[in-house]
Length: 495
Image (cartoon, rainbow, N blue to C red; front, side, top):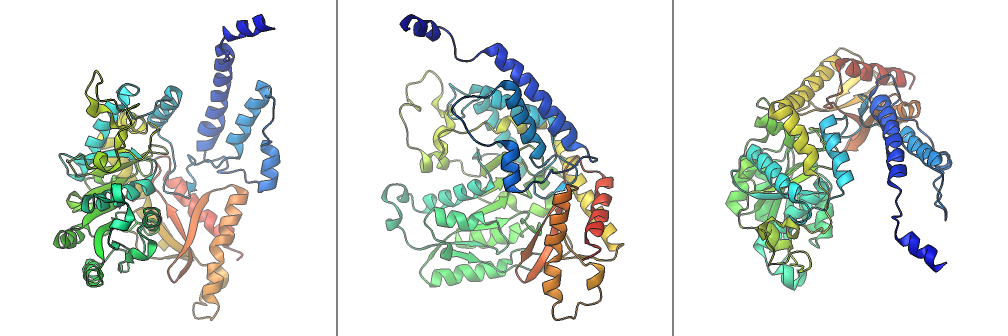
């Protein structure tokens, strides 16, 4: 028995030939189910199943012994079949979707390499590449110098900005903790991303210290009200330390007036953060970059290329104007088993101590490959096409009965109510709003169960449920936009 065990130790546990055969077969399934059927407008966006039924179909139970390869390949096929096809041209549900094949190749490559992006010795290619990609994005913001890093999502980028702004003002928080600080206040709009509230809770600032600044009818922050609220906060003994403005709000797609907000921030010497996770990609477009006029005056910017640029999840950046190495000062723990000071190369290339993470995925390659392949001009065309589709959708809505815009879109978010025939002309009825609120959920349920398309809905303030269609994916054509309108009418005509 002992000699048998010794012989086993001389052989790897992995059978490479068998593993590579499995991988080849799995890739065939992925290409067929996800990249062929999943992008075909004649196929379903989803194969909807209720949770109990889906659990049985997937056979989710984990067992003591492994299953045969043919059964595992069937599991791969099942996962692909019953997942939502986010690359489908009729997936309008989120602020990501579609597919870029250069980016996808980058995602396959980084998964195969399984690289951890914290030191130059283990990630030499990607340390240099991330530096270059961040530099390119900062130049679009308007900064010739600065810093930054890729983060696991825009919410995390926003939280980083809060932490950096607090550390810049009170560096002792890193060692002495929250007890050493005065009451701090953050200012944002009620239509900003919920991560501002989450970040305040997570960092110990408190959600009650997030001050909501009034917005205009389009959902844009009002600078005069920001100034008034900062003065009020100071008079109450608090220390205002960050304004989080938004370029492309989640629901309406509104762009806060950055230049005027920057004037207020300069006046009060407050860190100005721009959450451009959704709207930042307009900076590629000569035609639409004016929406972010004044962004170069910000201290930090969050930007998610996995959204409008279709770089693939996740691809999120935090960009900083700072040139004093604030990221590292704020977050470093100087772990000697990773960041030794006597290495044989420039230790400034060990960028991991800038991050609150240790293990960090490579997210720069997918954007770099895509950018290299189609250039800044190709990315600009992608942005511009989204605006063209959105304007076409609005124009077509105006030609049809039953479609009522919530507001004129500033971006590629088109928000509207569909008013079925039974409710038309009854706007004055006492129960009109209650009945209208039920329309979008029913239409959504029908489209998902039939698998024809996906589009989101939500209430907002005192506005009852309305649809929010996002039209930016490079796989979307005018035919898909026409189908969308026809399908809303078909699914809602009997309500």
